[in-house]
Length: 244
Ligand SMILES: [Fe+2]
Image (cartoon, rainbow, N blue to C red):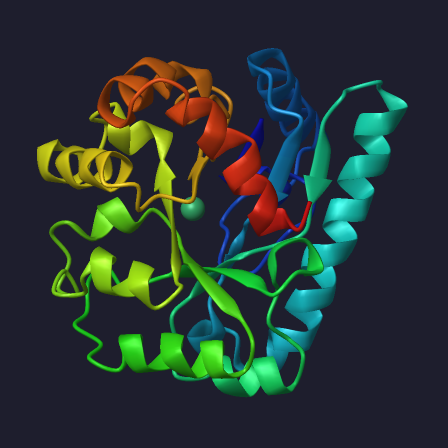
């Protein structure tokens, strides 16, 4: 299985925005939990917030990539059968087209797919325009946990319309389980039901309260989307996003 959204790399190096002290043992513990769940590929998606980086974008970009190398070396050394791919959860910003031009947009595994976090507290009427601009530059936005926009000011953005425009949407397992409230759960399930989800993520932040588990939502995904939906979303569908 492929986990499209995971924050474990914040335990590998000190990253701006993340108020976490690095601790490789925690990252390894998370990889072990994932491995036991049947996850073989994790996309590393630490927060990447252009508005808060100033002129640190290049340094942050390099850091994200070197941290993944370091983590993979450690996992190999310990015989853990999990591969971590580069990426980031890129916050929507009017700076994205410029970062793309400067080749500083951290894409998923070096593909043209980029995991984008839409604003959850501000209206940002320009957000859809930015997505379109990225597409014009040859990128395919993958909206991170689209279902979490259920109560956000940008909830007017229609998943059907995005889908028709070739934009992909990732759904969090925890949302489907109801951990983010009823409206988020409902929207997540409707994305699965209507075939608008392109893949699943654990959005794991730490081993205990936010672990990297996907199989916990297998029953609900297959109940809502039909038999085989979970396997499809966690293998073939996600594989097209990581370029495999
Ligand atoms: Fe996240």
